[in-house]
Amino acid sequence: MKHFQFFLVFMFTLPFLKAQNGNICESKGLYGVWKMTEIHTPQGVRKVSGTYKIINPDNTYFTLIAPGNMIVVENGQSKVVSLKSVISGYGSLTTTSDSTYIEHVKSNSSPGYAGNDVPIRYKMPDENTLISEYFAGNIWHPEVFERVLPISAPSSNISRNKMIEKPDTVVF
Image (cartoon, rainbow, N blue to C red; front, side, top):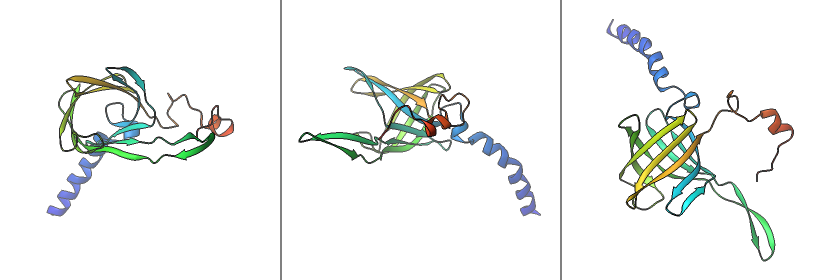
């Protein structure tokens, strides 16, 4: 009888757990796949491509650098060089308010972050834009991210048919 009661309680709470965690592709909040578009430094604003942050509903995260390919000119000859994608950092996070969280960094390619807790301030001007700031060198460094949307998302400006039939640009 105890097993049956446990089974009933489990089956009753399972939909609520699923709804709470959800799928990051359907998230409107902090959880999701984010593409970094710019970083602000003391030298100015730098546009960024190929850097992604994935924040999961289980409060784990990782940062992925996916640069793709680039054209390199050597001795007057150009060639395509394939750059490897790497996970540059990962860990877990604890939300401390509706505008702050702490990254518990397990690994990071930048010296001094691995094994530390890094406070992050953030705001979301809309559900598809994330502005986060981390503190380093006695200043806050803002980073701007845009949510990576599923191709079927109604607010996405990308048409799958357009991409297949006639792409506007060629990406290596």
